[in-house]
Length: 171
Image 1 (cartoon, rainbow, N blue to C red):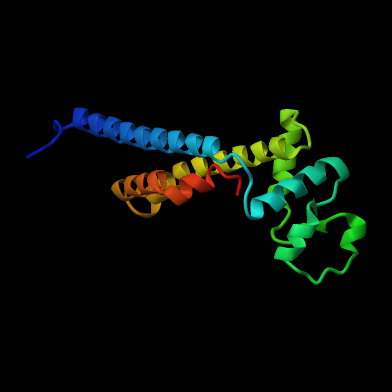
Image 2 (cartoon, rainbow, N blue to C red):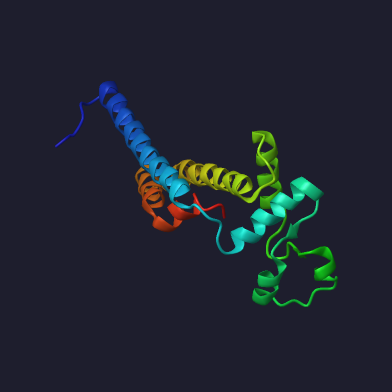
């Protein structure tokens, strides 16, 4: 039994159904990721160091992590510079790409070099990256697998709690 009419009309109908399915998956993924941006209110874990390093880039053009006492307790070193004199450690957990991008977004938004403003820039970066992952997974899945597999892949990523949380917590 055929689900669509034969010929050109059936092909057009199938294309519209696929487009609507992809749009529904993307909308669900975007809504979930916007909620993640809203519920992640404080930087946590390694994001804290990235936020303070990014704020440091805006103020002193260095990748310096503040609150060095608690940071050194977590990551005792050794440090080859005087952390008391520099009033913090330099970014040593991640490459500087993400903090540099967040500093650029903060600057372009006209934001201040404060932790909440910089954290918002991190959340915006992770939001747009998470949305791009959904779209790219569908596009690449269509080429490498099939349209149905690509739709399942995008739907799975759109509903994945880990992917949703990473798309809103700034990491």
